[in-house]
Image 1 (cartoon, one colour):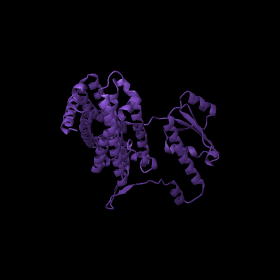
Image 2 (cartoon, one colour):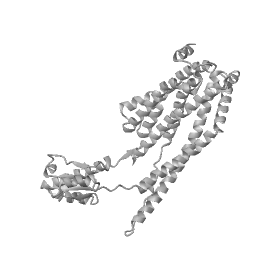
Image 3 (tube, rainbow, N blue to C red):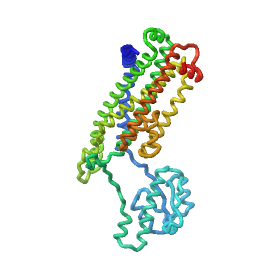
Image 4 (cartoon, rainbow, N blue to C red):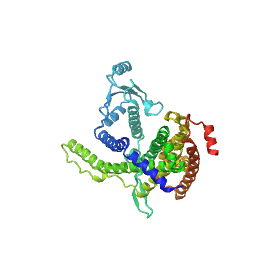
Length: 429
C-alpha cells in the first residue's frame, strides 16, 4: 500500500469537493438557518401569548367559583343562573368555549367534574382547567377539614427542587443537565445526519467516476484499496472542515444570542413596568453554560469513528451498482442500525444510565450516536467509553476488509448492478 498515492487521491477528492458550489452554498446557508431558528425561538419567547378562552361555571356548591375566579377571572365566568340547555346553546354558538357544573359530590371526590366543550382549546386548555380544579377542590377540602392555618399552609406549600452537581474536587456547582441534554441530543443528531449525508456523498462520488469510466484511468496507476482509503479520507476531511466552520458559527451565534435575548426581553419588561421601578436584569441569566473541552474531544472522536465505520460501507455500495437508483436494496441494511441508534438516542436522553442506553452505546453501529449523548448528560464510566471505542475500531477493521473486497471488484464491473449473492462471491475471492 502506497501512502503517497492515498494522499494524492485524498487531496484531489478534498479540493474538488471544497471548490464545488454545493459545498460553499451549504456551508453558508446552515449558519444562516441557525440564526433564523434562534431568532424564531427568541421571538416566540418574547411575543408568545396565550389565547383567551371563556369557561362557564355553574357552581351549585357556592364555594368553588370564587376560588376559580381568583385564579383566572378572565377565563372562568359565573353562569349559575342558567340552565344546562342554555349553556349547551351558548357553547354551540361559540359564545363560550365550554362549561362545567360543580356539585358537592366533586368536593367529596365521589364524582369527577365534567368539562363540556365544542372542542376549542385542545389538550393545553383541558390540562390547565384540570390543574385549576385540582387546586381549588384541594384547597376547599383543606378548609373544611377544620385544621389550623399552619397545617393548611403545609398542605398548600408547593415544593420546588434545586439541583447542583459535585465536581471531582468535591465542590458543588450549578447543574446544567437540561442544557447538556440538549447539547448531547444535538451532537447525536449531527453525527446521525453526517453519517447519512457524507456517506451518501461518497456513494455518489464512486458511482459518478464509475459511470464516466474515469475509474479505469485512475485504477491504472492506483490500487483499489488506495483509491478507497483516499476517497474516504478526502470526504472525511471535507466533513471535518465543514463541521468546524459550523461549530465556530454556532458558538459565535450562541455568544450573541444570549445578550440579544436579554436586550429584547429587558426592553419588553421595562416597557410593561410603566408605573413601578423595574428591577435590573442580571446578564448572567442569559449566559450560555460552559461546555467541557473533553466533551468536544469525544464528539470529534466518535464523529470520525462513526464516519469511517459507515463510509466504508457506503463506498462499497457505490461500487456495486451502476446508478444511484440501484442503491436502495443495499442501503436498507445500512439504514437499520442508524435508525435504531437514532431512536435509542431519545431513550438515552430520558435515562442515560438505563440498560437500553448502556447496551446501545456499546453496539459499534449505534455507539457514535448514543454514546456521545450519554457522555454529554451523565458521567459515563471510563471503561464503557474505552470498550465502545475498542469495539468500534475492531468493527471498522472488519467492515473495511469486506468493503475493500467488494470495492476492488465492483468498480470495474459494468452492465448491471450486483446482487447480494454476487457480493458474497466477491468477498470470498
